[in-house]
Length: 562
Image 1 (cartoon, rainbow, N blue to C red):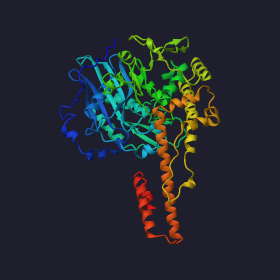
Image 2: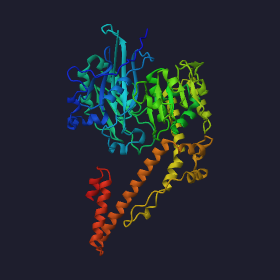
Image 3: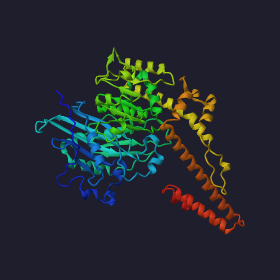
Image 4: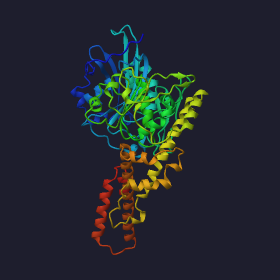
């Protein structure tokens, strides 16, 4: 019989008899102390071991590197999020993902070269951490409680769900036997990895296995990036991962197979950044589903908050469950039935159960009224009053269901699904990109004697008027109220995030063009020995220096050399 994990009623604590994790000696470690972990830090923030102690509850047993700085609030969140809650009843090994907000006051992460070159969906987080968890619960008579319960957690700013879970599959089973010395060796090995570099193929060795990865670049054609696994003949081989990002394509169909007929609705809810809760039977299912939903609008970046696994102990619990204001634009994955009562005022709730088959097809859940979401044993379904703007793609649904009947490989099914979502998002985004490009001033309007011209303001009405000629109907067969969907999208955080990013890129392009014209004008003046006053050249020099000084640090030496 399975023994559920009980949630303690007290805050988790750090365990280290020799040197408490929260001790002044560690907290006051200088910034130089991590200088030897530069490459490790480009992949991971730290590795945590969380255990269950009868006196302390869920507690951090070990953090590596030892001098990494985590606030008490971050440690508490990691402790609670690293264990399945008492309703999951996970016995054996369980893997899942969580995401937590960094504490206020933590030194903000500087946008680096990686983020400049990486696709928007794979950029390093600036205000959140991902936690990749490998949890083990097995019977152990030597433990008072009768069960060994421990989690190995990789904490990172990178959304490389499949890569890091592949690493955990390799190292976690051996770690639970060899403990700290083995973990130290693994971290030293990761510290030898080359920095993640968009567009590059990297070989990442870990305990005898080499993971060969291609980090996607923003210039790549949208789609998955291959990851191969190379090993010697002595070592057993895991199935080759298919992508460094979330979620792996083989997982996609598994997440959506009971809601295939409502795929259009879920895509629209993600596109619009609507508040949504996914209630699932386990942390694995809920975290995979949340990540699949967030990635369904790729290559558009999901600019709202999302939590693949969320518990009642989370520091944002009160913020997200208050009834005094409208629910925030956040997507949550939960396993505790208590949330059914807590989230009754939320507009969209997806209740998932164990996959049930109707003949040789997965039983599809129904859309139900929110008023029916009352009891803890609420049946699986999508509880919402939302009406989709676009019609269902019945041809796609029929193709996928027929593929299940004919036992088409899940990777092939997921590829069909991924391609459909990609083409749907691109059909929606292309008209926006085309209109945005029309707001860019002509290059001939950029002169060295005037300040750079401004990007024209975005007019929603003007954009809508272009849809008859250049709308999504040119690339998509789906029919429906596209204009209504765009107008709703304009009010969403996803539009705000997309517009700010595109406007910033266009402004930088104009400044770069302006700088080039100034340099060219100065060279021409000197070459032709025109009678230009020294004060004019001095003003040009000062102007050039001010523009160069505002550019990214890595670009400044290149321009100064010119």
